[in-house]
Length: 339
Ligand SMILES: Nc1ncnc2c1ncn2[C@@H]1O[C@H](COP(=O)(O)OP(=O)(O)OP(=O)(O)O)[C@@H](O)[C@H]1O
Ligand SMILES: [Mg+2]
Image 1 (cartoon, rainbow, N blue to C red):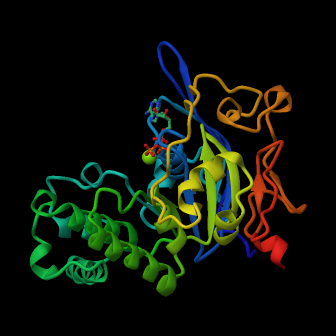
Image 2: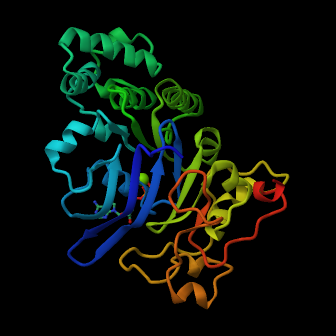
Image 3: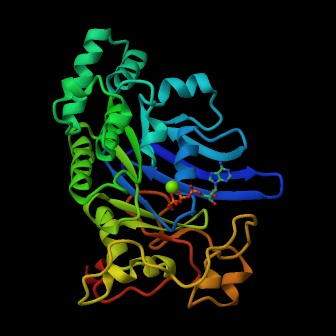
C-alpha cells in the first residue's frame, strides 16, 4: 500500500457523564489510501459516528479523545480549532448522518456552498456562484441555477443529501467521510448518491470512509471493510475476502443472512441473539464473548489483540486482521484456499 492519506491509530473516545463514563470508541486503527473506499460496519451504537466525529475534531467538550489522526502525515488529534478550521471542509470533509442538522436552515443552498469556496479557496462571489452551480450539477440536482436561491426546507430529503455532498466536496477534499449517506432515501435516490460517490473517487481520487448498514452498498462500493463491535475493531479485510471468508464470529453473524445459500438474503444487517454490552466498562476480555457460540475461558481471560492473519501489520491495506482467539476456519470457497 502507498503512503496512507489518512492514518488513524489507537483512537479512543470516552464521554464523562455525571453518573458514568461511556467508552464509545476503544483503540480503533485504520489506514486509507488515496482513491480507496473503506466501509465501516457494525450494529447501531458500536461507535461508527463517534469515531468519524473524532477524526474530524467535531466532538463536544465532554468527549475525551486519545490516539492519533494523521491526514497526509499531519497530526490532527489535539490540534487547535483555528488549525482544524483550515483543514476541515478543505482537505477532509464529512457527510453527516442527519442532513438537516448540518445544513444551516437560514442560509440558501447557494450560500452554504459559496461560503466554503470563499473561505478555503478565496474565490470571489461571482466565481463562487459559478462553481456552486457546477457542484450542484455534479451531484445531480436539476435546474441548479434556480435551486441555488432556495432554503434547505424547500428541498426533498434526497435533494438535501445531494446539497450536503456538494458542500462536502466543494474544495475537492482528499478524504470524505460519508456517514450513512443513503439511509432514509428511496432506492432510486440512493443509487444516484452512490454514483456521485463513485465518480468522485474515480475523477478526483477522493478516499472515502463509508459508514453504512447496507451490505449491498458495501459490496458495490468498498475496497476494504472494517467491522466494529462495542467500540472496538473486530475484523478488517478486503471486501471480497470478508464476504467470502469472514473470520470473526461477529462478522459471520452479520453476514449470515446475505450468505445463506439459495436464499435471496436480507441486505440489511440481521439480528444476532444477545445484547450489545454496556459501554461503561472496558473489559479485559472479548466483548463479543457473551453472545458468541465459540467462546471459552480464553475469550474472557484477556482482551484479544487485533492481529493480522498472515503476518503483516494490522491496519494496513490488503491484509486480513481479526480480534479473536478462535477465528473461524477458512471455507473451501475462500480466496486464500482457492489460490
Ligand atoms: N455526545 C455524546 N455523549 C455521550 N455519549 C455519546 C455521545 N455521542 C455518542 N454517544 C454514545 O457513544 C456510543 C456510540 O455512538 P455512535 O453514534 O458512534 O454509534 P453508531 O455506530 O454511529 O450507531 P448508528 O448506527 O445508530 O448510527 C453510543 O453508546 C452513544 O450513545
Ligand atoms: Mg451513527
